[in-house]
Length: 240
Ligand SMILES: [Fe+2]
Image 1 (cartoon, rainbow, N blue to C red):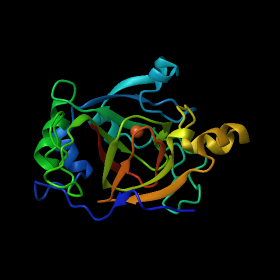
Image 2: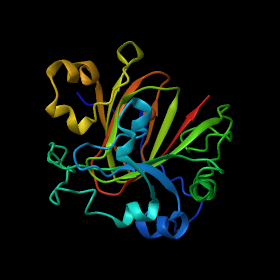
Image 3: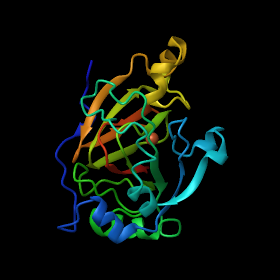
């Protein structure tokens, strides 16, 4: 069953007319941003994988420019596309450029977030679906870009919102009583045992997010994400 009750559609949040989030603009404004990315062609990349016990040697520091200019390594199967949502990405290995954004660690992306989205760490939530008197402040900011087949395994944290800037995502959401922390990449679920998949995905609400949609993930709700189109770009923030 598909749910769309936690998303708000068609949000155009740009404060900088003309900025597109396409590769050209990202290269112009944030080419030197760096993330740890797995280029290994046997495992699907998981954001912060080494924090979850995965082999740290698989992750390498990569600039956003290197990431965006390298398609070959990220699409082992050149035919990989899953915009149909029918699992056509089987066999592809996708890496994911996923970073926490602040002035110190990612000054270029932090500047873009501030100028284009009005988002700064500790600042007010500026997503248009939040009322101007909204009392919440951002606690973390995240930026991510990946091709079809990249994504994040089931995990949970405090309240968060995710604004899709380009592309398309599929989400699996489970209430706190069913939340789990997992290293099971959504793309790899088809290769796993029924028990493993059951632990992470059974009973999940499934929804698809399109560019301009904001998804709200409530506190402690489990969620996993799969990017369905190449160059899927998002901004996310946890808040309190
Ligand atoms: Fe998350």
